[in-house]
Length: 315
Ligand SMILES: Cc1cc2nc3c(=O)[nH]c(=O)nc-3n(C[C@H](O)[C@H](O)[C@H](O)COP(=O)(O)OP(=O)(O)OC[C@H]3O[C@@H](n4cnc5c(N)ncnc54)[C@H](O)[C@@H]3O)c2cc1C
Image 1 (cartoon, rainbow, N blue to C red):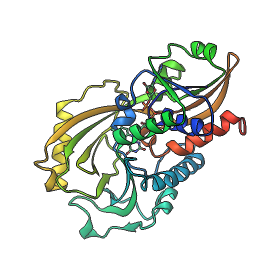
Image 2 (image 1 turned 180 degrees about the horizontal axis):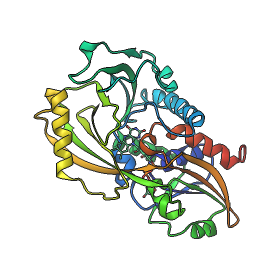
Image 3 (image 1 turned 90 degrees about the horizontal axis):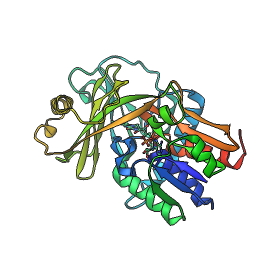
């Protein structure tokens, strides 16, 4: 069977299917480390996406997998404590996924940076994406999977090649599927040498700019920015400067940190996540795309559902 895409969804589906004994070929326009997935921060966290019941289910299964991967050497996953905070009051009602955070606690005033009025502290899986994608690729190949570099031009070509196809093309689904509801949400990170941080910080914001840092050993990934319908894929200096300035204001240790890299990724925005089956030119085409800013945190749950759809257990 054919999986299109080698971001976190294509590789996770590849792993689940290949480890279940399927012959799987992944075709991908980019190497795993060149995808949007490689750019993500990344944390498992509450996903405010639709459809809410299925998103909660996918997030729950994924949380369990990431928690056990944190015990696997070189997986790139570890559990870290940190704060999720906002400059406005979000009240006492927290998303249902937060029940999975064992030590979740409301922050008191002294625990919040200046200008912040709301926040929670809790331990979540943090995923160092370049290393984690290497881990997934190794697992996929060890299970007998094959990967081939080069774009799939049309779904008709794919259907002529194979009768079961899993489509994990992220923003690429806009063109490949012709799904106009898929749009790019531009994101940029600055990766710095870690000055000694162990905790993550993420600002919940309604605007396009926010502050976040996620430590992964000797590197820290700083964010963030979110620009809807912006398909450019080159880092912009003024955005990096803003990211560094905002981070240093909240965490002085980041002020002089050495910049290692600036990275850009396109979050696959869509009104709701798509995981379903389409019957297309004699093939079964299983879609798994449109996970916006939460694709890493939903990846295992979606892959398990894809595997059930492949087996025809659910339609
Ligand atoms: C700055 C930033 C921070 C983020 N932080 C987080 C976070 O903390 N937590 C979280 O859960 N998520 C986060 N995300 C979101 C997450 O990165 C995405 O939701 C996720 O990576 C989407 O994965 P994917 O595999 O669907 O797509 P992608 O990673 O984009 O992979 C798509 C794959 O499809 C291939 N492809 C596309 N079209 C074709 C074609 N025609 N033929 C062949 N191959 C094709 C591509 O080459 C690629 O291999 C963040 C994203 C960004 C940009």
